[in-house]
Length: 581
Image (cartoon, rainbow, N blue to C red; front, side):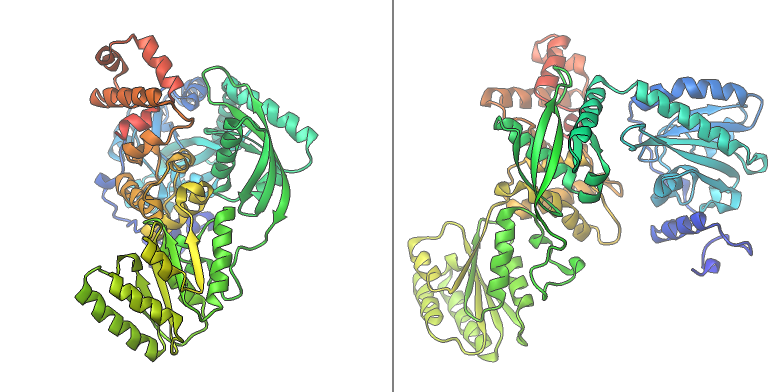
């Protein structure tokens, strides 16, 4: 890396962790002259969260030792947002406020460059940033130490403890002092673990003792895995596992199979009692049925980054489709792809053409159902075939009877040089069915609701397509909600929902509150009766009308607050759903 190209770089080389951070900051478009008005601010957080409750006594004692010094400590959440601040001498408050180092402001590297909070999160370790090592000029007057606070059992990063002072007042001995304080907070987190988490931990320990293979404990807000499971599971497998566990529970079964990124596994679950009002948790033991080291259609399959988004998926139904695609690509005979609207028929047709060793181009035509237009279309189609092109004829179910008959004759005769690929609606008329019979290959694409585990793979692929200039993540609760929605518009609808969520989230990751309310209303964790569903929608509407004020909502609904809270639990209504309404 040419350090001279970076802002503020002098003759002294950057430390490796700082250099990596500067590269990331530059890639995100952060400038050394960053406008502080652009720092993200969101004061809407729980000021009595478990992290804050664990940290408050520790930091209240710590700040006593900082009295009469220009030193401060503050707590940040996993999104790099400042939650609370403790200051030695009050005179330091002015400098911190001018730099927006205050509750509600976000200090992720993506928006503010190298700093103690954002860089500690990116590096997942203790980070010291001194004066000129900050990327943005307005932070160069400070020195800071950022220490990740990890959950003592799951290892999940719960937040960041940051020590900040003026750069001229920095003492290297402060780093171990802050690390020790973070350890005390982690210890208190263990004591403050909910009864549900403690029960799941105990179940996980027991399961790990009795099963040598992969073991996980999970529920929507909790995930714990042994070493064998961590080596097996991909980034999207957690949502797939929880969805499989829910299906087994709903069917009254404790054993089944699940398709993970590494192959197919037998899963046996044990329900963990986590309290009458909490979401059930499970301990899952996994055993391989069919292990795969790669998911490629054939030696001709493009690199993972080049595979069309609509072709990703792990479900048995979709693996069968991929096998059909491979066979069709090796043939020069006509191919028709059928399926519901939005299932990706045209994408599959283009992929078949891409995989076929041919020198011709792909000419695309859309049937309109208008005789004059489609008659000209058939003429162009024949010309393209003579040139040796593959021809993609979209929506042949729209063709008039006369032109459909011409197409059938064309299919039954020897086609010169080129090949016909076509797409068709999932419910064709009898006349169209006779035309379909003339195709040598018929590939049917199952609707997304029949292969919900594929959503865990489609979401990151679609987000990469929607935001090619940056990495956009989707939180596990949001993925789980998407997996519970029936998707009548299939993959096209999923893409539209994610686009709206990306726009709502800005440059941050997607959480439940960024999903449309109409998706969340139907994405229930359990199957509700029609009466329960109506009641659930009514409560969400009432809460949304009063900005989630539960006292006012109870009055509107004509019920007591205790009754409302009970219904929030039983109907599984989250604040994120209400805020997204």
